Each structure stands twice: as structure tokens, then as C-alpha cells.
Length: 220
Image (tube, rainbow, N blue to C red; front, side):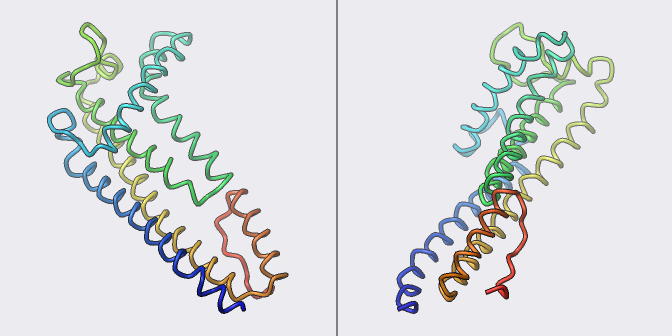
């Protein structure tokens, strides 16, 4: 009976694993685009739709950040757009990590992409060639760095590299978590019911607590 149930679930689980890996492969392609083409051509070519959609969301969050930080003074008001654009996905990453670590790669990739987007804005500070949402607006990073515009390039490089590393971590971590879940689910099929219940309870507690540890199957 248990062998029959194993055969029944094996196909859907393999398909689910393949779907996850395909999704992370696409994120890998987006990471390649961010690293190779996005910085130099962000305003000259049409990026992949997913990046376009993410940047549209980032823009709304950016502008909301300006409004929120306005009460803290001019400097915080100007910085608040880029800061909020990164803080919101970072907060979502922390919450997701604590509640269900298997979903954490998605906000992690958003955080990294948002940082890459901010790096483009920083790099543009000395030349101010990016098209803003309306004429007459202040270029945030030109204003913030106006007395030290030579810092724009190294600062942008640092933010870019950090953003790409976060994206790479999201892709790599997502692949690892997908295989981990598949391995655990496959192992569940061969375990006695009482041991399976204990294992699943332990795994749920570990995942919701943000602990990526492997459960010890020897306890069965």
C-alpha cells in the first residue's frame, strides 16, 4: 500500500520540482541580464517584462518613501525614496524567512534587483541623463552627492555588486531549498505514520522559525 502511494505522488512531486527549477532558471537569466545589460542600457532598451514590472513597483514605493520621510527633513526626504525601495523588500524577506523559508528566495531576489536599480540612479548623478517622472524634479543622488560627485561611481559599484550577490544568493538558495523539499517529501513516503507525523511537525516548526536545518531521520 505504501509503495503504491509512493508511486502515485512521485510524478506530481517531480513535476513540482521541475517547475520550481524552471522558475529559478528564469531568475538566473534575469540575474545575467542585470549583471551584463541592465546598468548600461536600463533606459535605452526594453528589459524583460518581469524586470519592467518590478521597476514599476519599485518606482511607486520610491515615491511613497519620499512622502514618508518628508517629516524627517530635507536630507531624509531625498534619501527616503531609494531607502524605502530597498527596505520594503528587505522587511518582506525577514518576515518570509521567519514564516516559511522556502518562499524567502522571491523577496530576496526583489531586494537584490531593487538595489541594482538604485545603483543605476546613483551612477547617473554626475551626468543626470536618466529621465525622471516629471520635469523640474530634483535628481536624488545628484542632490545627495553634489559636493562629492566623484563618489557616485564607487558607491554605485558597491550597491550594484551587493545587489547582484543578493540575487545570486536568492537563485542558489532557491535551488537548494527546492531539492531539500523534494528530498524530504520523498523520504516521507517510506516512513511509518507516527514517525512521519513527528517529522512533519518538526519541519513545520523549523521552517516557520527560520531555521534551515535538516531534520534527523534517525529519530524514526
